[in-house]
Amino acid sequence: MRTGSEPRTARSALRMRFWLSVWGEVWTIFGTVAFAVSGHPGWALLCGLLWLVVTVDLIVVVRRLRQGSHYQPGRDVPPYEPPRDTP
Image: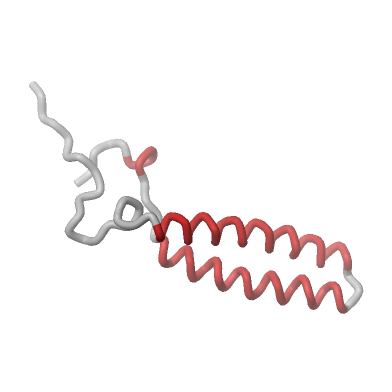
């Protein structure tokens, strides 16, 4: 059921974001090390900055997952208050 407040109260798939962040961690670490060893400091810096962004996202996702069902409800928990039909 749509309430009209979805942009403000939208939820993301946290478990999917967690695994995508882990995948990003692996590749950004690999890229940073590979570019640093091969003598491309600019690319290594860029991968290092992306590594920082992915790490911050991973921390936020883990924090929200640990907060429990408020951020990750089951299928039986309605996501929003149903709209009130007032004449």
